[in-house]
Amino acid sequence: MSKRWTYLVVEVKTNWKGGFKSDALKEELDRHGKMGWELVNVVHAFPTISSPTLIFKKEQ
Image (cartoon, rainbow, N blue to C red):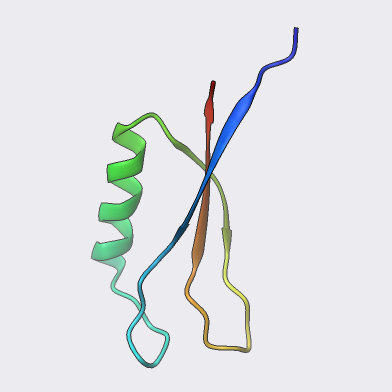
């Protein structure tokens, strides 16, 4: 039987220039990791100013 996954998409908050603090990113990763979420991808569209989007999965 195949596994079933639940996905979570989280947008990292950025400043007006599109930058973010690595400490804030680490806190976001740690917080979701403690809840059982596994990071599977980070999407950050360049050259536009966009927030990094974290994609997590967790087995149902």
